[in-house]
Image (cartoon, rainbow, N blue to C red; front, side, top):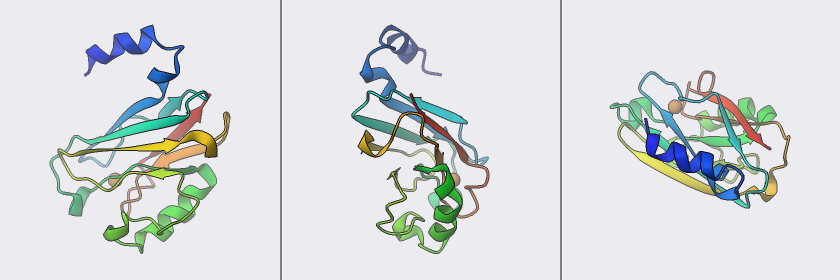
Length: 145
Ligand SMILES: [Cu+2]
């Protein structure tokens, strides 16, 4: 619960600022707390903050936040499994990865800021966790409008 943030978001809903800075949580039950994230198409950059609200370490219940076209989720997640933890379970330098955070464990948080020039309003994008076995459940729509 962050009631403090709700008011500014409402007040500045029409400005680029509010919808360019989004937050999502992941937990020990292998879940994100959102099935959809929406950003404003006018954003030049978007910052996504990922918080792991659980207690389990990254080695057993690590989470990251990866953005790609929806059609690329399965091939990326599959390739990422063999890429190992050193590469945050993503194929190194893969252009299909539009943005990604590192893998974090319980109690940690991380963020990624990315250029929106690669994304288009109305495009079919998804976010997911590429930690082995997580992507089937931990994914959602990333909407640009
Ligand atoms: Cu995960």
